[in-house]
Each structure stands twice: as C-alpha cells, then as structure tokens.
Length: 325
Length: 253
Image 1 (tube, rainbow over the protein chains, first blue to last red):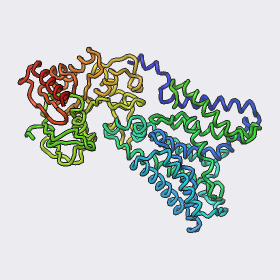
Image 2: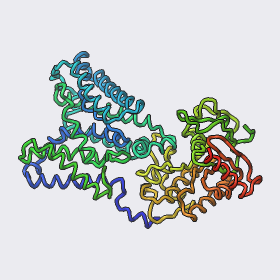
Image 3: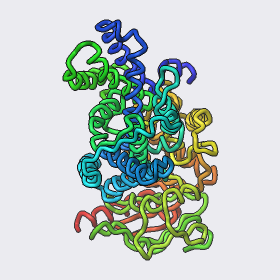
Image 4: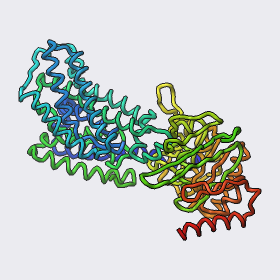
C-alpha cells in the first residue's frame, strides 16, 4: 500500500486549491504585463486588501452553505439589514459598540434561522427562498431606514475602528481579520467533524442520516453562519465608511458567488475548499481593481468576472480531473 | 418477546400513506445466530432492516426491546451506540468523501474539541481493509469512494460495520450484483461474524445464499411474517419450494 501512496503526489483535497491558484497567477501575470508600474507597486495591493476581506468573510461562510447542498442568496440583504441594526443602535446608545454589534450579530443569526426554517424544516428550494428573502429583507430595511444616510464621523478616532479597519503597516486590519476567520473556518471545514458533516449533507444526506449525522441541524448551522458572517461584514462596512446607507449590501452577490466557484467549490455540493475560496476572492478583488488599473473601462469588470468563472472551471478540470458542475 | 433475546420487535407495523409496508411483526434476535430474512420484492425486508437499524421509526403501538429493556426515541445513532451495525443495500456511502471519512462517519475519532484525528483514522482504516482482505493496489484510505468498484465499495461498507464492537450486524442484500467469487467471500465473512460471537441478520433475494449461512429463516410475505423457523426443520429443497409457493401466491393475487 505504501507504494500506491506515492502515486498521489497531490492529495485530491488540494487539487481544487491548485486549480484556483493556477488561474490566479496566470491572471496576475497578465495584469503585470499590461500595467507593470501599477502591479509592481505595493499601493495597489493595499487598495485591494481594503475591499477583498469583506467579500472573503461572507464568501467563506457561504462555502459551508453551498457544500451542504444549499445556497443562500440573501446575504447581500442581511448585510444591508444588520448594518442598519448596527447603525440604528449606535445612534440610540451613544455609540455603544457592544450593544450595537451584539444586536447586529443576533439579527444576522435570526435571518439565517428564518432561511434555515424555510429551507430545512419546510423543505422549500434554497435558491428561490433565499432570493425571495433577499428582496424581502432589503425591502424591510428600506421601510425601517426611510432612505436615511447615517454618518458616524465620531467613530473615526476610536480604538475599535483602529482594531477593526485600521492598518498594520501597509496591510489593512480587516485583511488580518479575514485571514484569521479563514484559518478558523478552514480548520473547522477540513479538520473538524462538523466540516465533514457539512460535506456529507451535500454528498449523500441519506448516508449521513443512516450513520447518525444530524443533517437538519448541520444545515441550520450553515445558514446561521452566513447570517453571522454577513453581520460582521456589515459592522466592518460601517466602520470603514463611517457611514451607513441602505445600499450597503449591493454589489456583493455576483463577486462573492464568482469567488466561490472560481475557488473550486461546485454548486452540486459535497466538496469545497476554504483555501480555494480565499484565492477565488483574491482573484475577484484583483479583477475589480486590475481592470481599472490596466486602463480599461469599468464596464469590463463584469466581462472579466464571466471569463474568470469559465476559465477557472477549465483550470479545475485540469487539476482535479472532473468537471466542476 | 423471549427472555434471552438481544433485540425484540413487538407488534411492529409501518405504513407509508395507505400502503402497509409491515404489519404486526414480532421478531426476536438472539446472540450468536444468523437469521436469513427472505421474501419477494415488496415483502418488507428493507423496511424491517431500517427499523432494526433505527433509520425508520415504527408506527405507534410497535415496541423495541434491547435485552428486555424497552427503548424510546429509537434512532440510527442509538442503534449504533448500542451495537447494531448495518450494511445497507445502497451501501450508504458518501461517494465524494474519502474511504476513511466513510468508515468513521458518525463516529469520528476526535479530540475534545471535535477535531478529527485523521492519522489514527487512516491507520485504522488501512489495517481494517487489510484484515478483511480488500488489498487493492489502486486506492489508499485517502482515496475517494467514487474511484472504487462495486465490490470494493461493499468492502468499505462491510468494514465500517465491523470496525466497532457490534453485537448485531445487519446485511441488506450484500451479495447483490456481485461476482460468484465475491459473493462466496461475503458468505464466508458472515460465518466469520458468527464465529466471533456476533449475531447477523442477512437479507437476500438468493435462496441458496440464504440457506447456506442461516441458523434460522424468517420469511416475509407482503409485510407480514409468514415463517419463522430454525434451519434444522427444513431441507434446502423444502426451503426453496416454500419460497416458490409464496412467490406464486403473490403472482395469483
């Protein structure tokens, strides 16, 4: 058996990460060739690291949901809603971070629980249900917020802001938070029994049930995780911009989904990778910034996302030997 | 319910909508015996298997006793923790996961924080697969199950059932779609289970296989227990003739 082990030079679980990394470095090479002065300067990377972590945090949580065989398309609205909850409670409590953050996290968890109830307990399609919830939650937030823009300039000099979205050298702190969350979720996904149970949910839930795995509870936790991660992004967003506006969550949906699929997590469930998601989110952030930095019109960004998703599928096919459906 | 039974099923019924899958089944499973559970398609064999293994709950009124003690909230987790292991007809394997993930699914070796000790699981899987004679040179415990042939997948399902200290092993059609030599190995394996003191419930469509290994026959007919008798009371010809009789009765109906 030892002889046969040598045949697997690259364990299967890392092949998706390699597919994503291969694509990323090819893309980075193209950007460097097209705009060397921009991409060989550290400034562009600091700029990318400002927005990348927000995509990454919510995308990391969504990997669990997608791998469990479900999808949550309501996360942009949860970012919007929990951002409102955070901003409103900050106003009501004279900027009490603890109260506001606790309420936002709780609101995110409740949104996740509502999605989970509809999908797991009532058996509705997660794709359609969470799409509907996305509209419903955004609508609710707009009703509650009444189009107000809430500014928090007084937060600019606070220690909490420095910790959450300040910078350590050239690296924005939110990037360090995102990497910390990626490490924790990576350990949970790849090494903890919960991560295995998530994969079983998307692979063969009947087998899981037969072996005593609580499929329903596992899926519920996945939805709650998306809600909580969305609220973390909302809190960081308010601190980053010192402002809350009710379009906060707009623009997250397509880049986050693209990051997941570029990262090698297929829509069919049962498989996925946290490392791949980190690379996928980085790829998306580079497309966002790189297209402009390369001198192209901003309209090319969506085109870039589309090409990136398709090309990365080919990369995954090459490395993992399977079609990423 | 008999006194020294490991598991006793009392008045077990199971309906799906208006369809009676099982009707008032009373069955005892004793230590160290092989029970061949046979019957035609739709007789209720798989449903009974699922109830024994905890993946299905019986209808109200049915009772399950483990060594004389009545159990409540019967579940697959409870069945496994008590010592009932099942090899399902569909093998209940997660194809995209590794062999060792499948072997330890639901009973992962973890530290106190729930993190899986992969090294221990891989070593134990490797030893186990060697022990039961599945020494394919193509895969390792880290290979995903979708790479394996049908026989090898059955090997994984069987090894999962014997890894843990079980008292009863339920095998739902383990020889179906197998080559003759593979099926013969499985029958030898079943006898080996008995020798090691385990009880076996062997579900099969094949009357010759069922007769070859059994100590007792249980024949189900359209959800009802038709025959429950020890092997000594029936020759192979009688047994097969009896099965044919039930099958013809079903055709006439």
